[in-house]
Length: 96
Image 1 (cartoon, rainbow, N blue to C red):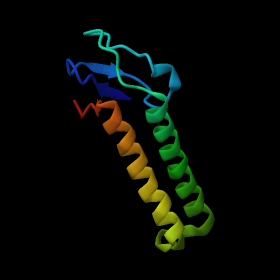
Image 2: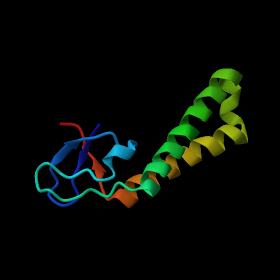
Image 3: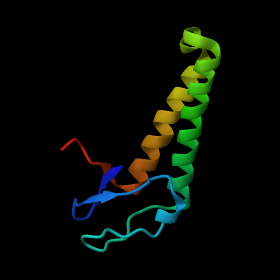
């Protein structure tokens, strides 16, 4: 995944979920990116919610789209992942 450094806006290839990026520095300007245990936990929880929603959908079929359980997991995925990105102050790099 490509992300943008909040300081210099340079493109960085990084896995935003990995704990090993907690002390990751921008290769362009050297600024430490804001990967913390909290942002990584939010990212992992968001991924888990996405996987749960997908498994629930696969097991129950199209009818699962209308269940509160699926809707809750889908909303949790969006909110947790967005929170993780907002706290990191990094942005996904758009199409080139």
